Length: 382
Image 1 (cartoon, rainbow, N blue to C red):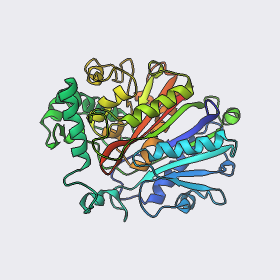
Image 2: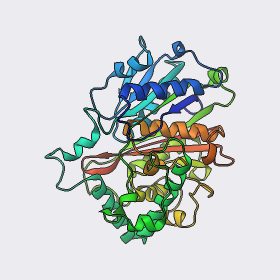
Image 3: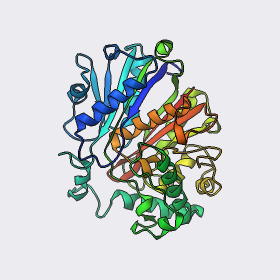
């Protein structure tokens, strides 16, 4: 797949609590924004296939076709936990690389609040398979305390992640939260699940994003500055609690990143900018290690030293990440692709990172009794 697929357009909507927008309105807006981002334009009739990424609900292919008018083409729905959007993109890329289609679109969407199938309501549903009090904050709180115990990280280190991402989000026009926080505010915030406080947790967010891809040899028809897919990786890990690496790693992320590095012929040191999964502040620290940006147990030192800030040597989550931008699950990974697309084209505005040639997107996904049971990684290049 290396360099066989080009990203030629991408668009997303402002993320937030969107009671005033239906799912169809959200998808239509993201679709139009993606079409309008194609420098030389693209006729919608040129789009030969579509992939819809969404986690729950009654959604089928017609859900995407109705608001976009993309009828009489194949539309596939992809669902893979929090990695849904990135996996939908991966499926479309493989179809292009296989020569089945010349052009395709990926739309990721999630209505987390007021939709009949909105995911927020699941918090109150009794599930005999869910162990008592085993919520996502408690899962990741366990990750935090284990990392602190095993490697010497602190609550202050996790707070620095929140401060960094909220700072970036304040500069990013599509972020759910566009207000900075201080480390004092993070440390004094109500505890959700120790050591994670309110600002260590991503918000519940509605959103949609769209990306258009084509065969690499056709890219110049649409734009003089395409972005190419260098590598892709996907892996799954055990769904059973206790079969991971002492709670302080996401093995699926490590496997997926190795696949992507190998396909791209690159190494972690080659990544200039990344949009990586930060559903909780501790998640980003662990991801630094699993994605190979530092040795195991040293992730907190990267944020202490400012390496991953917007002005650092390896900026991570310039959009504000999930902590500030939000986490509308099906849209999250597609939005990451859109953001790296803008970074590599030098069009990211106030969050533009200087001299970028290689970018990464990364999501983890959760199972009922395991956090990080899915890992999906993409490497994009100029």
